[in-house]
Amino acid sequence: MSKKIIKSYIYDGLGFPVELHNIEMLKIGNEYHPKIDIRKVADSVIQSLVLQKSRLTGNQIKFIRTYFSMSLREFSKIVNESHMAVKKWENFQNESTNMDKNIEIMLRLHIFDHIFVKKQNNEKRKYEFYNKFLALTEIFSYQQFA
Image 1 (cartoon, helix red, strand yellow):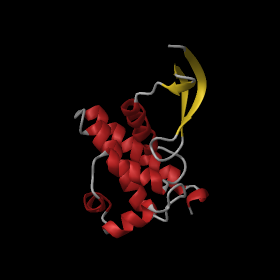
Image 2: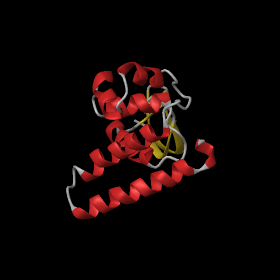
Image 3: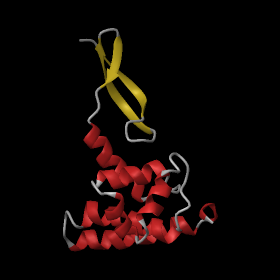
Image 4: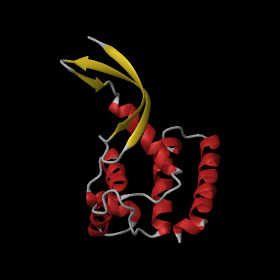
């Protein structure tokens, strides 16, 4: 089986494009296919969404919901909106949702809390949580989110 490394590869398997670097490609038959650990990519992406500079897209909302294995109703309780509102956001697909800024901040903080703070329950992580809150507040205060 022939192999090669590609410096930059766009992976669309999460519902939106993610740029991966130094991806091993395996030749199967006459075609090369990427050797990707999807769980590792998903874990990395969920972490990067916390401080993403742009607003979340509908496909990213769906990814977040499915990453945490939540139904529309379960997810709606986290954002304190109806399940129909969540479905509407997801229908924006690759476009930014019209989600309220405060709801998006709370969702990003929920991700950070679930991924970092609750899994590693210690004081340092709680301090980092507060710093992420401040960073998110700064991101959302820029004119691009008006």
